[in-house]
Image 1 (cartoon, rainbow, N blue to C red):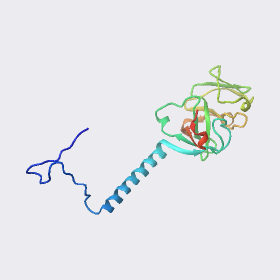
Image 2: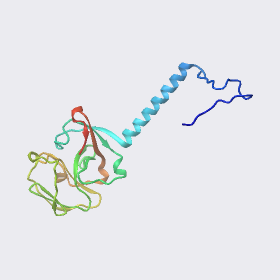
Image 3: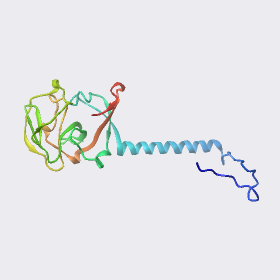
Image 4: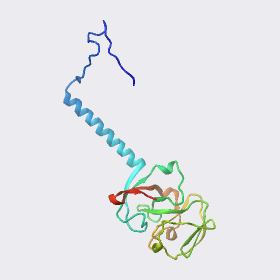
Length: 197
């Protein structure tokens, strides 16, 4: 720890070790200025975090059950995909391709370059069956989807509740430009609090 010493001798009439704790001007004005400064900094930091890093959103619908429930509140990370690639299994938030005013939340099943096919509900990626522990047996369906190789910037997304989900099987792959966040953390209700997997 760096220590500071008072000057003593001819240059200072104050005894060695003496300190002054009196603020210049009106003490109440000083406190008000400090409080205002701290509040402003807090607001700016919160604005930065919400705008560029984490954004709270509400889940509407049951297409991502059991991982996400209707009306749950979650934080989405808007910053991660500036530095990390979107991966299979990520739960993402994106603008709905047919109406960009709306936002959807789904799971990434296939990424650019993948050869995707769905046969009677079983997803195949690059010729191999995809293990999907997040899809419960009672939420599976038997829909098929023809073989398709995803182009650059395309992501195939599906809901975990397959039997009721409107997803890339209906509206096609999602372009990278429409994806704006990764679902990261459930913060409400408290008994469901935890990381989104």
